[in-house]
Length: 473
Ligand SMILES: Cc1ncc(COP(=O)(O)O)c(C=O)c1O
Image 1: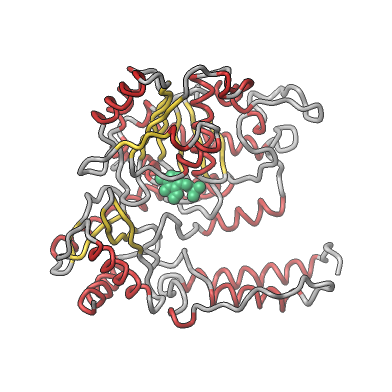
Image 2: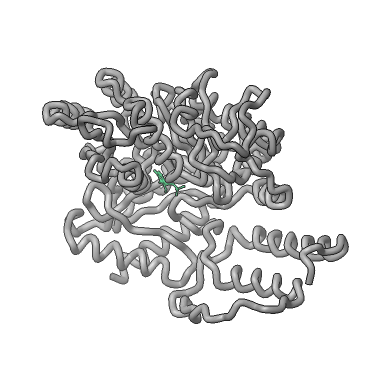
């Protein structure tokens, strides 16, 4: 069968697919997140690559049916999960268009309007950070790549010779700082940049799960005395475990005094800048040298969409710029080619979905989403403080709630074992999904509101399941 399907077949298959997606979306408010535990067994993947194709509609139906019936449904309203949202429908449509047009955003000459849309979306987000031009940024595959890129910028800013001559050209080893709760992409980046993971100094957090600036300053001073070269501080704006937000103004002050690059990892939490009512939670973010924000977390975008922004636009080209004989040397447009300002070469258009969603729903729809999810999380946190079974384990700042079973000491193995049993009881029938984790070394249960479909009634059903599980163990 040729890839060149006729118009009638394209329409028939396309409409069929839209029917599947539509039915799926209608099911999400009540859909179980996954199969009951006893059915979560999957046969080994032993099928051979087909030599000949089969009838398209039958294969599509089979794939949709299997994925929906046996899948793990991150978009379900009952997924109180990690930071993966229910995608906005406009974004789903945008992804179809991107796949069809397949714009190559590496260079402007070959993407033009698509690159301009991407740059415009970056500008919209940067303006919400509080910056006025000049600033710049780039879409990424997610927070991992954005954080990696930010640290590459920081390194090139502090030690320009590193871009061409590498770390071997430095007389003193560079070091950087983040809280003990910062995301592991920072460790990975330190390793991949050749700094070594040990160059990352993890600073303990206080009771609010914020990086302790006093401990940070004394570590910087010790490192300087040891002949090391501090070059960057990573502030978390929404930690993965608890949604904690570091004291950004205090860290900005230290960064200024010690000539360090301040990166804000707001992969999840920086989206709060979209709400005028709550943007003060990330007060000071405009003082950052770079910011990570992932639209595929709180902004209801499907994978993949991360953004790296910087208030030092010139550093993008200094860090990532290369020239090739097969690409145009200069462009008459005011924008730079994307391949010169980012890690990626071939680049898919990760921005259209956000641009289109903003065009159709507007920024205020995000404000409403953020405000509503914060209200729901507050109500859940309030429930834990009043509950007979549970206590709040960390301050609830963003729509993430950490809580513990009453009774066992928080740092005990008994608490960890009890939390693991509660999480597995709650998730056993597949309807709901929560997790357990450790915050500042202590075991906690963790729920978060991340779907725009989650309502109070979903929280109540989670509360009932939690009480039942707590009583059972
Ligand atoms: C705070 C934080 N930073 C970075 C990342 C990495 O983002 P991504 O998964 O998009 O690569 C995550 C992922 O959950 C995160 O929570």
